[in-house]
Length: 295
Image (cartoon, rainbow, N blue to C red; front, side):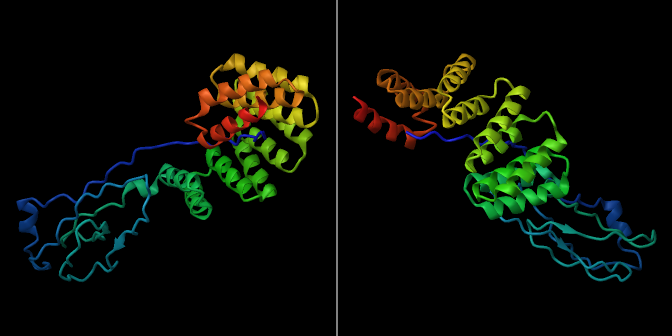
C-alpha cells in the first residue's frame, strides 16, 4: 500500500450579516417632499431583505447604481424587489433627500470570499477558488490562511514553485504558522526532494509538536530514505498524541508490511479500517481487499 503526504487547509466559516433595507419616510418627511422641487408622488417599491448564503455559493449580482446626477428633480424610478441600489444624496438643504440603501457589508468582508473559495476548493473548482481567494486578499492582505490555501491549490495544479511562493508569504505574515511549513514539505516530497521535505516537516513540528499531519509526513519521508526505525519511532510518538488517528495506523501498517511483519501489518490495517471507514471510505475498501492478500 502507498502512503500519501497530507496537505493542510485553513477553514473558516463566518455567518453573514443581513443588511436592512431603507427606512420608510415619516409623515413629516412626506410633507417636506411636497415643496417646489418635488419629485413624483409615485414611490419606488421597497427592496426586500435578501439573505446571502455562503454554501453553496451562487454568483451574486452586482449592486445596481442609480444615475449620479443629483441637481435635477426627476421622478423616482421603480426598483425591482430584492435588488440592492445606491441612491445618491443631494448636498443642498433646500431639496428633498432620499434614503440610501447601503451596499451589503458581506460583500466588503474578506471572510465571505474566503468561505466561497473553500467551497470551490473542496469541489476541486480551482479557477473559481483562486478568483475568490484573490478577492479575499484584496480586502485583507495580512491573512496568512488565504496564502496558505492558495498554495495548496497551486500544489494540486503541480505548479510547485508558485505553491512554495504562496506558502512563504503565509510564513512571512506569521513566522510561527506550522501549516505552510508542513505544506512546503509536501511540495518537496512531490518533487522527490525527501531531505528538503524532512527539513520543513521538522520546522512545522518544532512550532507545533502535536501536529499529527507533519509527524506522519515526516515518518513517511524517513521511510523513503530507508530510515525505517526512525520512521517507526515517529509514528509511535504520533500514536501517543492521538491513539484514534487513522492515518497513523495506516502508515504503521505500511511500514510493518515492508519489514515483512505481516501480523502487525494486518493489525494496524484493521485498526485503520475501524477508525477511518467514514473519513476514508475509498481507501478503507482497498485496505480490506489488501488484507485478504496478506493472510
